[in-house]
Length: 495
Image (cartoon, rainbow, N blue to C red; front, top):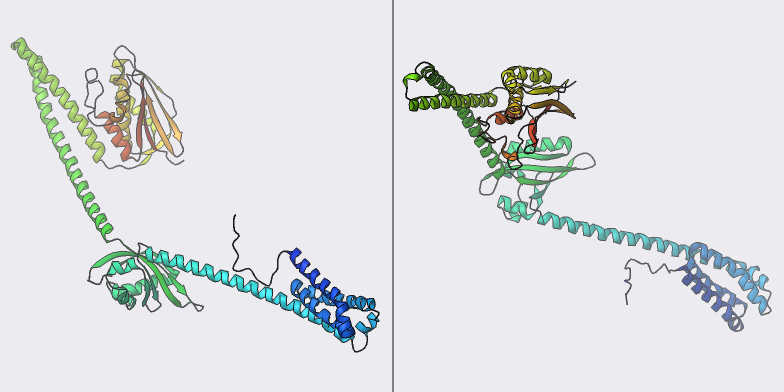
């Protein structure tokens, strides 16, 4: 059976529920009425003065109004009881020299009831005070638990800077024992005394600081880079009473940040040198390739008859290899140019860029009898014109190129507005890309079906690199044998 817990704050002055008080009142009044006649025969008419006892009880049960009403009703009750035993009840109760007694009973009932009400109020206030005190103790216990178990060092100092409370994390951080730390002036923890003064100025303006950078000294003299988050508690006259704060040691993370910055700087410098070296080598290599290719072409056109069939085949291979190598070097130079050139974003009309790319590819378009539809007008984007022209030209070149020889290239160009961005897309009816190849299609030197479609595999890398340098993105959706849709997403130019 469930046992009801007793509320320790329940007042003994309050008897609940109401039916219990009414029952006790009825018993008190009934007991007096039934005992009146025996008391009358023992003490005479003066026994009516004993009505003060049930009035006191009623006042205690029902408060000031209950005691007052009980005292008032005791007067006619006594008169009726005296009349019942043959006495002139009203004359005795209200007669000269006796009425004061009846009035006294009324006053006593009211006073007792009033005392009962005051007692209940006092008891209620005491109960609330005890509850508030218990809540305060519970809050203090929770605060102390959080304070002591926090992994971040926490401290409290006086307005003068004397530490008067600190948790174990702070003790471990600085290497002092707790008694030593609690007897320490915070100025001894700063790298320089003037740092403490600057900290006080900063916290005095707003009453708090967040992630304030300082360098603090441990007991063994080691300097630690720290961030302090603290508040000042002020008195009535806006004078500082105390400081409360937490300290975060960022020495290791700051060292890692500095190391990462140095490594990034070194990496950027190495990449710049590598790009410059690649560009220089590619440029010089192409110069020699052009020379070799030129002489090989002269041999082929003017002196091949002097060679044996085997020699002619070797010469043809040399000329073909030279052309491929020259195309590869040109693509490398184009990629290096996109990577190294300064990018300046400005409003660029996509219509103009697409028209320019189509003119540049006019020969390839005629050779394949390609059908190209531009769904214009196209919007204006924020881009570098030179880089964007290279990106669009490579997209269109791929769309014309990667279509089977037995099919006529049919290409559509359009753009969609996506909030503050524009997505330029090129749709073709080419060979498409398998799902396995989609993830590598933008990688440098990756080629799809090189036996049917010769090339260097750099074109789409130029597209991706150029888009990224302009703050954009690239993507493709395709299925093998069903064509592809490549897209470039850039920021729209402000209206």
